[in-house]
Length: 118
Image (cartoon, rainbow, N blue to C red; front, side, top):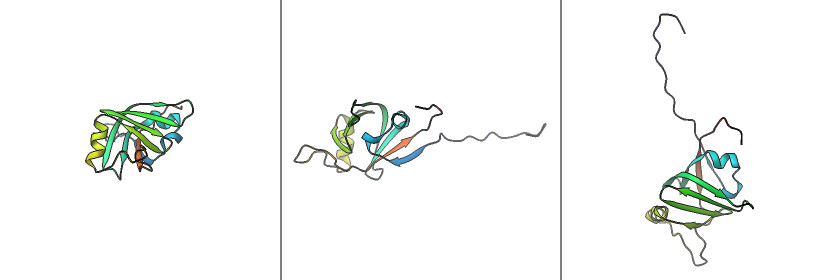
């Protein structure tokens, strides 16, 4: 800073980290910081509004804009509401003959790191 000289402020965007994940292995910190879910090479995305993790950490349910996405381990086993319509729109068959859904889904997350330590 130099006295008497005008300076322009620089705006920066919010820091974000993109990485693939397995829902059941996400830490509490990662769940808190997860803001967006992406699937199938970013063909479909969902804003994360909340989550619930079972006490055994094997089931994670994401509350997304317009529905829910439920993982058991690394498999999506339930999709509800508008989330289901969006998956169908990209040609993803959300139920197979065994009743399991989107096995080995390529899931990516956008995380907004916080200064809080969880």
